[in-house]
Image (cartoon, rainbow, N blue to C red; front, side, top):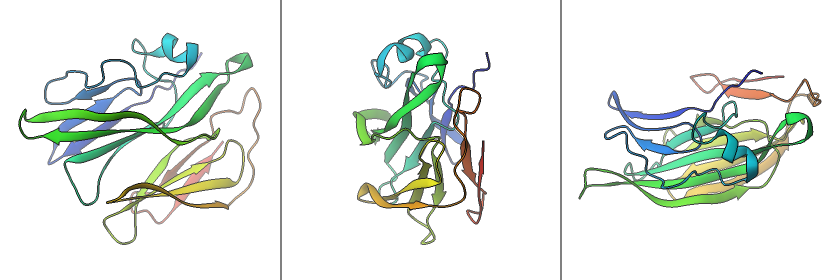
Length: 193
C-alpha cells in the first residue's frame, strides 16, 4: 500500500514555528503538542493513523496567517474515513485557531475542530489573493469539475462561491487521489487524477 501522509508547516523569518502531521499540531519552538488529543476525531480511521503514522490525505492541511493579525493562525485540514475497499473519503474541511501568546512566548490552541464544510472533496489548494493580503482556498468536489471557493481574510474564513471549471475526473477504486495545486505566483491551477 502507498501512504502519502499529510504534512503542514508554518515558517516565518526562516524559523519553523508550527508543524503538523494532520493529526496533531506541534510548536516548532518546543516540539510540544498544542492539542491534547488528535484533531482528527472522525471514526476508526483516525484511531488507526493518528498519531503513529499521521493522516493519510494528500495536500490535506495548511497553516494560514490571519491577514490582519499575524499572531492568529488558522490550521485548515481535511478529515477522512475509509469507505469500502479502503478508499479514503474526505468528510469535509475543518479548521483550528492558534494564537501566539506573548506571556509564554509560544503558541496556544484557541479553538479546535471547527467544521467549515461537509463535502467529499479532493484536496485543499490555497493561494494569495490579488489584493496581496487575503487568501483564496479552493477545493474541488471529489471527481467533479464543481469547486468551492472560500475567502480567508481578517474576519476569518468565509464561503465565497460554488462554480465549475475543467472536466469531471473519474472516481473508482483505482482513481481516488485527485489533487490540485496553484503555481507559486498564483497565475495557474493544475489538477491531476
